Length: 270
Length: 289
Image (cartoon, rainbow over all chains, first blue to last red; front, side, top):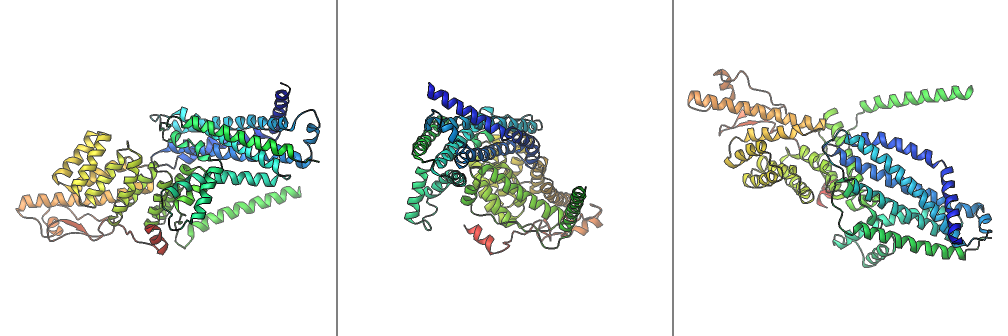
C-alpha cells in the first residue's frame, strides 16, 4: 500500500511536470492544425476524400504521439539523472522500483492525455470532411481501436525509453536508441513478409536472413498495433487481433519495465 | 527601434524573394521531371507504419505533376514513370481507389499501356471486391483497346453484379454483345467516367477524347445518311459536304485530320492517342522489376 502511494505520488508529479512543459499549448496548436489541414489534405482526393481524411488524421495522431512520447521519455529519467534532480527524491524512503514505476505511471497519464486530445481533434477534422460526404458511413469503433493501438505503441516505446535511460547516463543515447527501436519495430514485419514471399532469394545471404529473423522475434513488432486500414476502409477487424495486440503490448511493456527496474537498481548514481 | 526596422527590412526582402521565386518558377525553361521512387519495400519501411499515407502522398505527387505538366505546361507527361509510381502506391495500399481511378484516366487511351493497366486494375479487383468501377474499367479497356468483346462482356457482367445500374450497363452490354455502334458505346462509357471525375486535369483529358469521339460519331451518322440517300457510301468525307449531308468536316481536337479508309470507316491521322514511350533506361529497369 505504501509502495502504491509512492508510485502514485511520483506518477502525479511526473504528469504535472509534463503539463508544465507547455504540453497543453502544443496540443491545442496541433489540434488547430488538424482541423485546417485535414480538410485541405483530403480535398485533393479524386474518389475517397473521407478515407483520406481518416488516413491522414490517424497517421498524424500516431506520428505526433510518438514524437511527444520520445521527448517525454527524454525528460523522464535521463534528464533527472543528468541534472541530479532525482537524487532528492531517491534519498526519501522510496525504492528505486517505485520511483521508476511512478515515472512510467506519469508517462501513461501523459500519453493518454496526448492521444485522446489529438484523437478528439482528429475526429473534429474528419467530421468537417464528412459534411461534404453525407452518404458515407464511418466505423467509429474501428477508429477507436486504431487510437488504442497508437496508445499501446507509444506506451511500449515509453517503456523502451525508460529501459535505455536506466542503462545510460546521458539523455541523447536513450533518445536515439528508442528512435531505433521505433524504426526497427515498424520495419521487421514488411521485411519478414518480403523474405517469406521468396522475392529476395538472389540477394539475401543466409546470414543476413538469420539476422533479420532474429530481429523480427527480438524487437517489438509494432505493426501489430496498426489498425488504421480497418478504420480507413471500414473493414471488419479480424476476431482476436485486438486482444492479441493488447496482450502483446502489455507483456512486452511489462518485460521492458522489469528489465529497466533491475538495471536502475544496479546503477551507481553517485 | 533599430531591431524593428531590421525585422521589417528582412520581412520585405523575404516577400520580394517569395514573389520573385513564384514568377521565376512560372517562367522556367527546363522540363518538369517526375521523380523515381525507391522499391515498394523501402517505401514501406520509410513510411514508419503509415503505408496508407505514403500511398496517398505518391498519388498526390503524381496528380500534381500531371496537372502541372499536362494542363499548365501543355507538355507530354512521363507516362511510364507515372505508371510505375501508381503501381508502387498500390503495393503500399492496394485499397487506394484514387490510384486505380487516376490510372484509368491516364492510360486508357494509350493502347500499348492497356495490358499493364489491366494488371493494375486486376490488383484493385482482388482487394476491392465490392467496387464495380474496377471491372467496368477493365471491360472498357478490353472492348475499346484490345478489341475483345467476349472478355469485355465478362467483366461488364461482374460490374453489373456489383452495382446493377440498368441504364448504363444495359446500354453498354447491348453494344458489346451485338458488336453494334462502337463509337456510341465509347461515348456512353466516357460520359459515365467524366460524370464521376473530380480532377480537372483528368476531366480535361477525357473531354478531349469525348469531343473527338463525338466528331467521329457525327461523321458516321453522316455516312449512314449519305448511303441511305445515294445507295452507296461516300468516297471521301468531302463528298458528304458537297452533297449537303454535313456542313463541314469537324476538326480533330488531337490536331489530326479525319479521313475515310478503304473499308469506309472514319479514321484520323492523330490516331486519338498519346505516346507511351520509355523516357530513359531507369524506367525500363523499374518496369522490368
